[in-house]
Image 1 (cartoon, protein in one colour):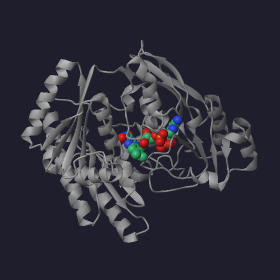
Image 2 (spheres, protein in one colour):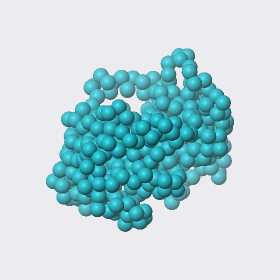
Image 3 (cartoon, rainbow, N blue to C red):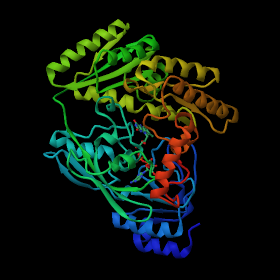
Image 4 (spheres, protein in one colour):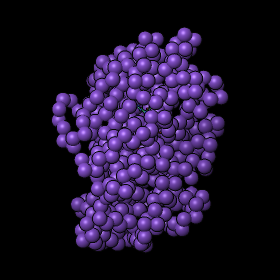
Length: 457
Ligand SMILES: Cc1cc2nc3c(=O)[nH]c(=O)nc-3n(C[C@H](O)[C@H](O)[C@H](O)COP(=O)(O)OP(=O)(O)OC[C@H]3O[C@@H](n4cnc5c(N)ncnc54)[C@H](O)[C@@H]3O)c2cc1C
């Protein structure tokens, strides 16, 4: 609990209107897109880095847990205030501070929504590549803290690859800055990479300098269907193995396609057992050559149909379909387990077979969705937590899916992170010494463990 004196001090910083303390208000900040909940004692909405620093000085003195929050779309429970205390919501720190396409960077506050960066860059002919499925709502602060990925990260890389610098408020309230607006800068430790993906456990990001890139001359997007899921997955590893690196290769199985069609009627082929959305970009001539090579690989794997988006509208329709997959699956049952294990791309067919086998064994529905080009699997299992037997089966299936990925040389998470969902699995992929080293770093920057406690270490 937070004492009334401390509350008054915090109120002096943010004012009454940027502080929530009523149970009905707090409830909205007790959960994210994962299936657990914990109530915060207070929610604060800072507007400046100095306010964040002032809040942290008070919390550090009183050892109050602080959990940062962007849009609350974490699917691993990273933004749930597991040990209660304060939720620091960054939604009001949402300014795009500077756009400089000549020097290829933007400076943003953490509460800016990913899509707003894309929209702001459009008139300049530039874009910011990381495009999580949640890009219409998730914040750049959340993307940085989770090192978010997305479909086009296959070619362009993930969030950490675009961070030039950042400003961070430490647990003590001290403000530190790393990196610069220079696209090349090796001055000191690359600390922005340490904070990226740390899920708010090491510091609070209050400003980010992001590298941006020019929009390519040509973009080609195709939808391919197969009557066999194995061939669908094999096409992905065949294309990558042939030295072709598309922007994205997204895999959807029959259950996923049908769930999308039931909800949005976008004209996807319901009868297909598997389908791929493949996108390439670059100069026109290179794209023409590349797409021919891709067609050959797809035909060799018995593709049933290949449809090319003819207009930007048609391309957008395909991406809308792909991005809606999580949402439509979430409507099928009260709860949804959206997995994130990742395997080497050559092991994607085996991982899909194993996932189908495991879920079948436990009598569970599954939709296979994957950023298949980089082996990042998102099997979605709709279920009901109140159905105890079914939920126990979900838990058992989860453990077996994780183990199957590890057996195939894979890893726990490709982009969704660890949060509450996967801390228990860390010893499966990290040694005692590896985990101990993370604890050493955590203790050095947050000795009282007040930043997002209950996660990671
Ligand atoms: C429909 C859907 C699709 C998704 N698709 C993808 C996808 O394709 N790729 C992907 O990577 N993820 C995806 N996600 C997961 C999620 O959207 C991402 O992890 C996203 O980056 C979270 O952003 P957020 O603003 O919602 O952050 P939140 O969920 O609010 O917070 C996430 C983490 O960031 C920390 N945090 C937030 N702001 C700060 C800050 N300023 N400083 C320090 N820590 C901070 C929080 O404490 C928490 O640990 C998806 C989720 C949904 C619901």
